Length: 144
Image (cartoon, rainbow, N blue to C red; front, side):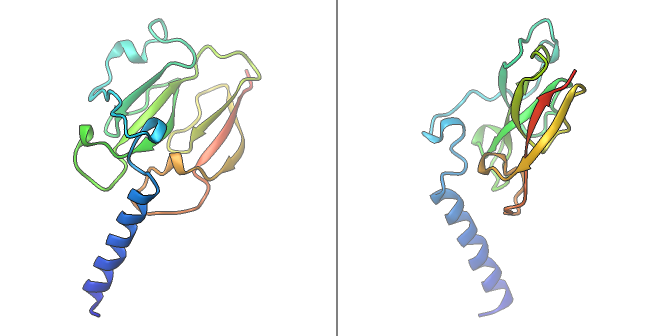
């Protein structure tokens, strides 16, 4: 088998494994089609408009606003056709009391006042096209 044929077989095998594992179905993995916002508005990033724990589904091209973290990644046709995870769910952390614990993807830095207490692997946080079992998630604790 040529190198090109081998690479194609590996790529196809990875794609089949992702589909079989349920990757790309999005939140809940029931195949639902969550509403995806193509662009973040100023009101989403505004603390007056968002409460602690609020979530939004956005395309990967949107930067995660200050005070928010990524909590899940998946592939969605709403954000373009690709094998790369292109949609993320973000969560507002501003307003949580000191001592609150939250699990977040390691694809964004924790907001000010939050401390990383552990890191681990989560299939919900595969934000790269390159499969890996390396730690990609954090447990965060509100410290001040």
